Image (cartoon, rainbow, N blue to C red):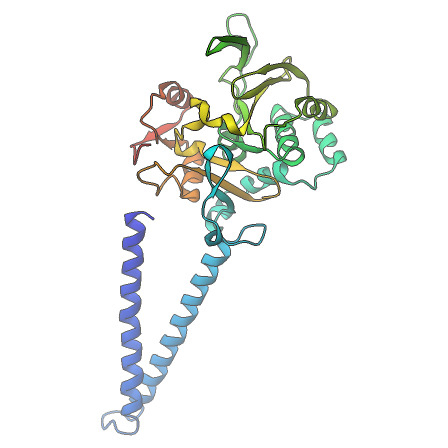
Length: 353
């Protein structure tokens, strides 16, 4: 909890105690002086009414505040956030379980929950998905949502990173005008690790927003062939499949509206600088299967100050206002430059990991 929130809570408690003291004093004085006030016989009665109503109203306000806090802390599976504040996953990764946004933010940004549901609702039918993918107005973002739904709901994966930031929360979309030899949609780089050379890895130009889908696999026994077949059922073209030190990179829809999926094996997450670093506050959100309206947070015990990192509502507002805060002391200039090029602005750092 930030210092401002602590100070605000203390001020509220002090004001509440003062009001209660006034109400109790009025009640006690009125009761002790009833029928004994020479100036105005009805004054003690009014003091009793004032004190009683004030105490009753205070109890009502406190009870509503308590119910509101408890209701915002309930997860879709019925558990309370205090039961499990942080759970530890494979590969020593820490996450805060998904929860629903608080009411004021939900009312301000109702579009967020709709996009979360389209990706995390395992009860969506084949006809529903086929209709969305085959519709004449089907967009690149629609196909990305279907690919994310297959990963989350059929393969129990977790989606995190830029796709959650730019599309699920932000609702941002952009596409370059043309695919030319000077400004190609897809470029390739070669990854080197140890003494092995792997195939060139595809990268979609950063002018596409959302750009790619970062997907953490549930275990090491992921069936990539079955996953590719599921994508093809909904008309998603499966292009190059590259094995990397962290899992797989899959190039999809290469000819029209391309995007990549980074499929990351859990045990190898921490071996990759790209995925192990909590670089910015706006990159730490994730979604999971059947958390229909909820967002989770990745977490690091090494972060020195977590008020912004773990305040879900603040992160959502930052994304909607295209503002971010750097959380890492590592060199992430390439990432911040990409954000600046897209019109984002940077907060001063709060605490580095």
